[in-house]
Amino acid sequence: MKLGPARARVLVADDHPVFREGLARAIRERPELELVGEAGDGRAALAAIAELEPDVAVLDVKMPELDGTEVVEALVRDGSRSRVVLLSAFHDSATVFRSLEAGAAGYLTKDASRAAICDAVTAVARGETVLSPEAQDGVAKEVRLRVKDQRPVLSAREREILVLTAEGMSAPDIAKRLYLSPTTVKTHLQHLYDKLGVSDRAAAVAAAMRHRLLE
Image (tube, rainbow, N blue to C red; front, side, top):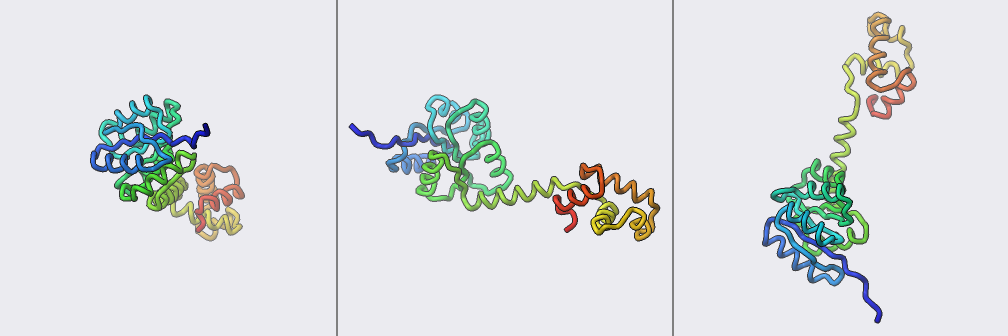
């Protein structure tokens, strides 16, 4: 007898019974999905996932005991093969980034339709990563913030000298332009090199361009 394709085994965890039951019902109605368990808090979800080994666990980000991201971190640490879709009522970019960094395979808002959530579960079971438009925006925002935070912090004088250096001016020329002593300019240049992690003028200009410090 020819067997049909295996259904993805799914576990749902949410501390709001009405939401959890509605999502569980939607999963049961999908022929490609099989509901294997439910949980009402993060610790119970972690135990159930360890016992039932679902293909996909759908977890609320905000749960008692352990939040969804903490569950993801524990699953990754334990080497679990279960993939996780996180649901959240909030669009906090830092939370989205942290969840994906921890190892979540999907992140959707809780106001997504049941059909959209089930579609995401099916996609994640196939090995894909699924983000809602709000989560995508959050990740992009967080990446921009983190890149900005990684830029070296320069003083106004250091930035001024950096710009003149990029224009090709020598230390003596910069000293004359800014009415500083050559020794003072060289000191500022050394501070620039230290902050940029370089050892010469050309590398300093290249690093400044890479960090977008000359814009």
